Length: 256
Length: 272
Image (cartoon, rainbow over all chains, first blue to last red):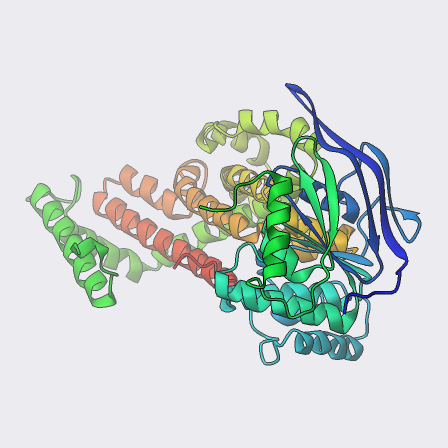
């Protein structure tokens, strides 16, 4: 599976620095980060909370500006958010005042109604929510809301999906189900996916490559290739070996 | 489990509510035993007075006059207060510019404005295309209601817009939704629950203030009824008018809270 042909670079992060100035002085959130994301790959960024991984993702999405360095997508500098690259929040990111249909169609303004309806239903179908298009988020379970969030992002047909701990608010069983779903959707649509998580197992289950970020210095330590066939089993010895390796890099004692 | 931990079923609500009300009536009756209509009247005299007022037709006229003034003042306050609140919540400079002034004016009771209201609005009828929209006395009362409801509406709207979650705004930006579309599709619905709470609060204050506002220079309304009856030493009419003020206030609040609940129900955010 992973004997991939060399794919072209989609996103290039070059010597990125990001500094917040506070009363106590400048805080270096990102300190010389370099990363290349290939087209169509699933890349995970893992690290402890506060290591700047979410900030890096926000900068890649254009929500925040970097202090120095450059982030380019298809050779173009990222300086504002764009529907070509969509951010997927936790399940709570969908709009509670809109029905499932309206949420999924949120980014499709200006499309004639019939075309929009067909398009929206296609993505509701893709995430397996047929029959719920008139439901409101308050009537849905956490997993279903997460599906709406994915459908809303996919409906504008972006090249890149940014996933910022998208499963963090779900219960353990729903989380497993949604991980399987995101792998299926990723394979069906071929989007470039960048996942930020503090869950090492999640990163190894989903990603082609795992980038490890450390807190001090706030930079990218290394990028591991995950050469395991899917579906992946977190109890397989190679999986466990990789997990140990990542924990070692992060300097965390894994056993309780 | 204690009784108060059980959910209140409607028979329980009804029985306990009626019981509390009965106790209140009994205490009222005992406290005013033997009084006549020039003194503090009891519930029986009040009811008689209420029936007299209702059959004479003045009661309806006064209710309508009061509700009319509250409706105008309240709607004008919402029409100015909500857009201003949105601007203040959205743009920090607008907030820095107008907030000190608003916070200074806010604690001044609308009652204190009565002399100026009469001076400013007491002289002329308010006409629109030749028709008298409201006469001079209405204008000053409407102005006071406007003042009373404006500040809670502005304050609630400002804080509602300021506390909109970043992820909603970022989603909108991500999908290229800007300008008027952003306002209509994200800002307004996201802020709506808090704005509705502010409106409900404002309407409650407006109804409290109307009675005071109608004590000067007007010849209709429930506040006028109270003042006029006192001048005629008909204290039973005074207490009857008070009962009506309470009931109408309750109805207005119920209507507002129903509106609030139905607007929020499908979002699963109703507090009922």
